[in-house]
Image 1 (tube, one colour):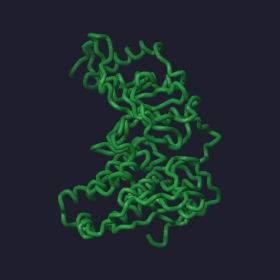
Image 2: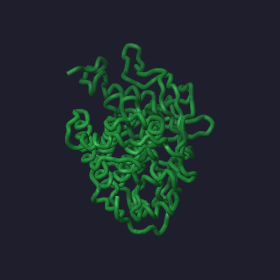
Image 3: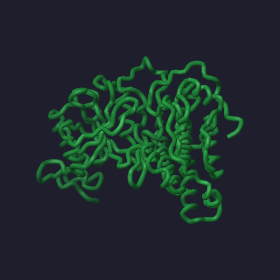
Image 4: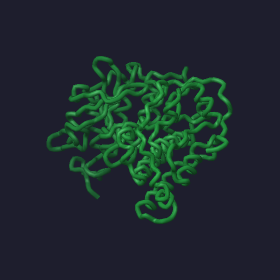
Length: 391
């Protein structure tokens, strides 16, 4: 087993000694602060426990970023891209007594958190939950910074070239093959399965917080479905993007893995159809009532029956009927293999039968009250959820 050049004990991962790294981090604790004791402790805990470089977070002074550009706006903050001058820590350079770093002067995303000067401990714990899952198809968090003027804290994240999946679909839907659509869905289902395997629930899954890279798709904002100054007086309030919220959640029930699966079903509709869900109607209480009464998005193109059946299962009014993320991604993997091998059975056969009937319509304009950013959804007296008579 390889040993550390500094302490001569076994290393925990390639070029990483947990004990020595923790000591070097601790010796530097007095040289930085976020201005918030809870954030400081959170970052320090990741550094002391890190068994490899991708398990730690840093406090990154805002002046270590340049070429900052606003690229988007969410329900609870703005998103920027910027070049991180230093890049992320890789390992300790014992000769020069400093950290070796990767990806200097490369782009990262800065997710600003509105009203976060008074960020709550609960919200910090949600960030910790996201950081806990360092798996493929989950976006990486590098650290935290603070805007010097607004005083809002900002999460420093891996940068996605194509930005949100919603943005990617708007620009590229017509070019996507069936195999590519299934592959994107497989990435999302795989990421969601990792979240659920870690005992977590996303609670705000939609195409705005799924990011598209050149060669893959990753989930972000795990659990971050509330304002940064959220407090317990808002405990029973629902935040999210209405079309993706399961009917039982709209009625005030607790989030479950099955409510994430409902959101996935809506995303599946969006990727297959190229249309944002309920794009042509107002996202108000009337829509919430209709969703509880069984209203679901409709396709304007012919779709393989196997896909329709899976979407119907995901969108079932009864959470117990919905499949698990593990079941979904295994199904999607089988479909992807079937298409790649051009196996004249199953989904490939169904796709071939309808390939001449694909829609070539432009992405339609949306209703002025169709809102695709997270917000408070406060609807009282909604009916008991039920399935549509026909879907």
